[in-house]
Image (tube, rainbow, N blue to C red; front, side):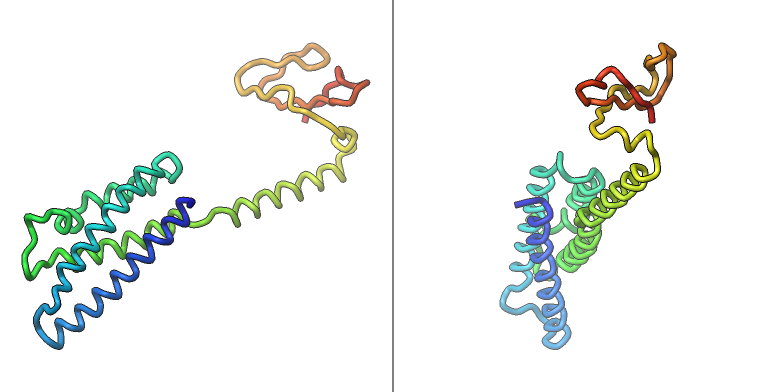
Amino acid sequence: MSYQEEWGAISARIATLKEAATLRAGQHATVGRESFGLGAVMRAECQSIADVLQIYGERYENTLPSATTSAIKRLLSSRPIQGVRDNSLMTQNDRSIPEAVTALVMFAGELSYLVADQQPLLRLRSQQALAHLQRTLAVNKRVRGLRKIKVVARSEGSAVSNPRGRQRRGRLRLQRVDEGLSGHTQRS
C-alpha cells in the first residue's frame, strides 16, 4: 500500500470520528448527559488514530514530503492529542475529546492537501517538455541532425573543452553516438 492509499484509510477513520462526534454533540444537546459510554469509545478511537498516525509518520518518513512529517509531529505533540493519549487525565466530562476531534479533522484537511497525488502535474509538465522538444527538433536544423545524442558533460563550475580546444563554463554539450560521427560534438 502506498502512503497515499494508507492516508486515504486514515482519513476515512477521521471522517467517521467527526460524524460520531457530531451525533454525540446532538445527544448531549437533547439528553444532557453521557450515555452508553460514548466518550470512552471516542477517546479510544482518538488514541488509536494518534497511534496509527505516529506509525504512519515513522514508516514513510523518508518518502513523505518534509512538510507532511512535520505536520504529523506537530499534531502528535499538540495539547488536545496529548490530552486524549494520557489516560491519567481521563474524566467523565472530558473536554479533550471534542478538542482532539477538531484537531484531527483540521489535520486531515492539511495532510490531504500535502499528500495529494502529484501525478497529473508531473504528467502535464512532461507533456509540455516533450512538445517543446518536438518544436525544437522541427525548427533547429543542427539539433534535428542529431538522431542519437548523449550528454557528454554538464558542468556548472568546471571548465569543459569543446572541439576547437576552447574552454567553456556551465554549458551542456551533446555528442553524436552514430558510428562514424562519435568524435563530433555539438553544443546546445
